[in-house]
Amino acid sequence: MKNLGLILIQCLFIFQSFAQSRYLSEVFPDVKVSSDVVYGRNATIFTKPLLGHLTPVDLKMDVYEPIGDTLQERPLVLVIHDGNFFPQVLNGSIIGSKTDSSVVEICTQLAKRGFTAAAITYRQGWNPLGVSQLDRVTTMIQALYRGVQDGRTAIRFFRKNYNEEDNEFHIDPNRITVWGNGTGAFVALNMVAISHINDFALTTNGPGKFLFDSDNDGVPDTPMVLEEIHGDIEGKNLTIAPYDFLGITEGDTTNYANHLNYSSEFHLSVNISGSVADIGWMNDNSIPTISIQSIFDLYYPYNEFSFVVHPGTLYFQTQGSELIGELQENLGNNQAWKDGIKEDEIYTKEANWHSAIAGHPYYEGVYPVINSANSNGIHEGVVIDWWDPNSPSPIDGPGLGLPWNEVPSSSGLSMHDLELIRNENMSAEKARANIDTIMNYFAPRACITLELSDCHSDIFTSSAEEQLDDSSIKIFPNPSNGLLTINASEKTLELIQVFDLDGRLVKSLSQIHGTEKEIDLSDLVKGIYLIKIQLNDAIVVRKIMLN
Image (cartoon, rainbow, N blue to C red; front, top):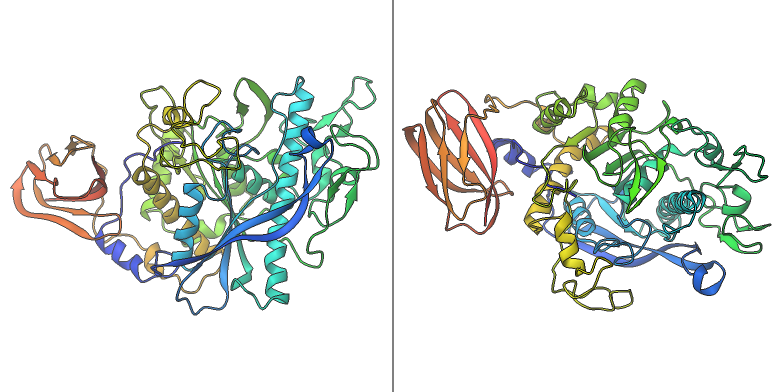
């Protein structure tokens, strides 16, 4: 995961125009959370090493709603967490649950903007230590399939609740988004791509990667996922394995029927650092997809020349945001965004710039993340998580309730110290700044695709003031302990304003009429701020950090 870097931000009047616009900004101060809502029940493989067979498990979610909202039907966003199909610690990470800091923050922000958000769990378990490529690929792709079934089951739960339970969570069944982070994005993207279980036999990138040689004649011919073994793609039918198959025992119940009479259809997908198992599955019927991903992603490829990588082993070829965006563009699936959002909208403009750095045209719906490696030589990706090193790990998990700075990892470091290698200078401010960028890229596209009438059109209009991306403007040191110097080289400084991330003006210096100015911000709370610099001929807006 990694910081989005220094990003040009819209001027104050843009923030002010957001302030009263539902969906485009936070208009509700508080949210309520319904925790551990059971949305289905299905078979997990996670207990098989201990019990020798699959067992049923409740599928749970936390539902976030805005307090004080009078709207009876809100757009729904399902948010699927990261975690490599394993719980925290076992997956080598502090993250991996529906209560990850990123999931809570995203769901809270969505609810404050006027959505209903649901952070869902999904079934876990596969064999990353399998002795053969077949073991590893088979168990991973079957875990993905179960995740896709669970995501679709959650959608049907809400539609059933809408019709049979008086719409307890006030959702609009015709405006549903599926949002995934990391492994959750892998699930969300494949909910878009996989339309039939036969897709596993029909891959093009690369061909036959989910087939194995069942009769040992040297020709792979049998899909690793079969309906009679694993259930249908919707997760609707009761399935009992009729024979032993790649880790499944004859007689095991592998799928339980949930919410049979309802549709699993959704309307928008959001991918944060994920990939699709085979891009050949996507076509001109694929729903619009927003992708935010580092071009140096360590775990899922940004393009087609990489593989899903977990420590020490290559698994199978997948395709990431660059290829997804190119295909969606060619198919016209994201065309409404090209027509409805002006090119100089600030986050669209940033995505254009970053695409050029990444070496490809801008594909509408794709925001490439560009920044350098940290001091450990690691490209952190899209950093959206943080944690308290002194807070306890889950008491019912392998952390046994110990604080994160005491939970040991396989590396010999504590889980906290291990994560700091991949998320240097971890903080809520660092993660929230990136989540804010993601939200602002997502919001206008959601407005268009979901046809949200409360969205105000000023988000799509360009600034009346010229915005300048001028590397000759120096701001140092940044981060700063409070004293900041702004050097405009040969340009004249007229006005300097500092805003917090809520758009509030916290410092202003006017009538400068010079090329350099020192500004004292030591009286401000530590964190990230926006500094707007008005020159004699242009405007520059930058991010600064006080530490």
